[in-house]
Amino acid sequence: MLPSRSDSAVYYFTKPKIWLKKGWTVKEPKLVIGYPGIGLIGELVVRFLVRFTNAKKVGFITSPFFSNQVVVDRYGNAKLVGVALFIKNRDEGDLLFALGQKHQEVMGGELETTEILLKLFKKLGGKFVYSVGGHLSLENSGASVWGIASEPEVANMLKEKGIMLAPAGTPIVGGAGIALGLCNFFGLKGIGLLGLTRSEKPDFVTSKAILEKLSSLLNLSIEYSLLEAEEAKWNKMEEKYREELNKVKLDKTLSLLFKKEYKRPEYLG
Image 1 (tube, helix red, strand yellow):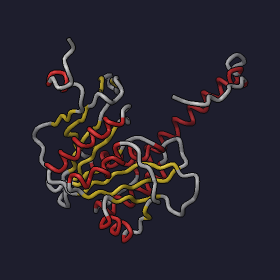
Image 2: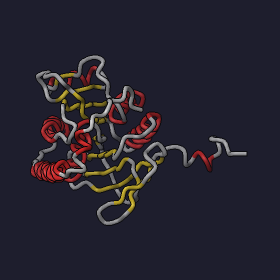
Image 3: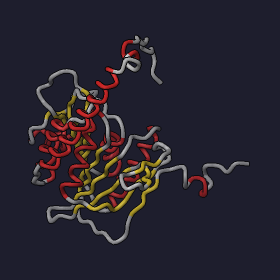
């Protein structure tokens, strides 16, 4: 007979878990959350802040709902996919960064993982959550960043900062959005910053626009050379890719693949 989900030996491996290092301290932290998504905006913003502030890694959240794989880094080391946690100690109040490396394959996993993260944040004495991400926009709304608030008081604060509120009905998919929805249940306040983009590739321009808004909210002075260097690296990679693609198109055999017409599927699963 198979053990049930209530069996602790089994349940341990069927729910998200947080792993924390020892020997670090935190005071009045603010939480900044970012996941990869449209334009990779959430990931670009949080990864930049981690590097710019020289934050140190203090923890990791694993979940069976992430893709069942490890990723090999440039040193040949196997790395689990999850949410990496970083701390930057400051006199103005510490910063806790949560960098999601992938979206989870089951939405229930996003909910449970975010719950664990917010429980930790509240235990550490945190009060304010900042969540960043991208939003596909095909129209020019007159703004590059939309704000989302966890409550009316926060919405008024965004207006005072000159940040346009997102229209009613705007969906925010994934952990970054779920965090804002859960804030009230944990007695936390939350701000979401959505970068409006049309880009399928990394959108560095919109990421910078979010960083400019976020720097004011976090009382953080930012210098953007690291972001510009990352953009230059991506542009170089894209140029190399296009060069290789052109070589393929010039190949008499492989070029037939580009001439063949494919019927668009009616449904993508």
